[in-house]
Amino acid sequence: MAKIISLKEAIHEYVKDGSVIAMEGFTHLIPFAAGHEIIRQRKKNLTLIRMTPDLIYDQMIGAGCASKLIFSWGGNPGVGSLHRFRDAVQSGWPVPLKIEEHGHADMASRYQAGASGMPFAVLRGYIGSDLPKYNSNIKSVTCPFTGEKLAATPAINPDVTVIHAQKADKKGNILIQGIIGVQKEAVLASKIAIVTVEEIVDDLNAPVNACVLPHWVVTAVCVVPGGAHPSYAHGYYERDNVFCRNWDLIGREREKFQEWIDKHIYGTADFSEFKKSIQGEL
Image 1: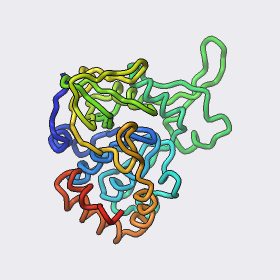
Image 2: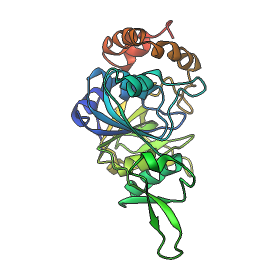
Image 3: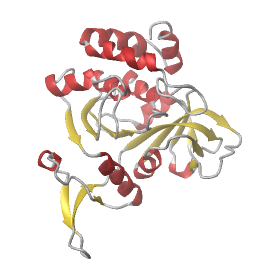
């Protein structure tokens, strides 16, 4: 059965310097609270994996938590670039960042391979693409049945996967509703899974075809209401578009970013305090 503990305890116990970390959630349910706690505990030299790195990885990269990013697209959705990400790649600030870029379908296939216990993923992809020239983890195999040449990439098996969800029950079973990304596959592929949730309930009351992660694949459950902000949580709160627009200005300059993170993350004890600290500012 999954342990129900505080987010501070979970990050301290399971996220170590040098770990390979996947933090997934597509459009909504992005685990911002967990990312902030990783920053707050000053974890270093992390390899970060995410199909669509956005503001949370921009913040973690800017805080010097990451030494490598494995991804398929990066940006501030609907706004523009991730300036801390760009600065780390181009100028090595605050620490140099290696990047490994893949296609969307490839990343999803790699998670699926990891979840299935397979050593690599196979897909029709990268035809006419230059990515294989720059990414040595994109190779090719020949189908033994048809002779077709296919792309092959190594399975993703993170040390720790972190996701956010709407509900958990008291055993640690997890309910995810709304748009589903690769959270299920990322959890099943990982050695350790930390799930932040909006609430713990007696009964999940899961509707037909909902995504339910059983407690035996989850390591720790942490109750963090609002833990996906500024992304949205289906059925709980909407996306904070003002935050996302303002982040473009905050993240653009090193000094302004450092002032923001010192005040709102290092200067707060937890995500609840963080949300209070940004009221009226973003």
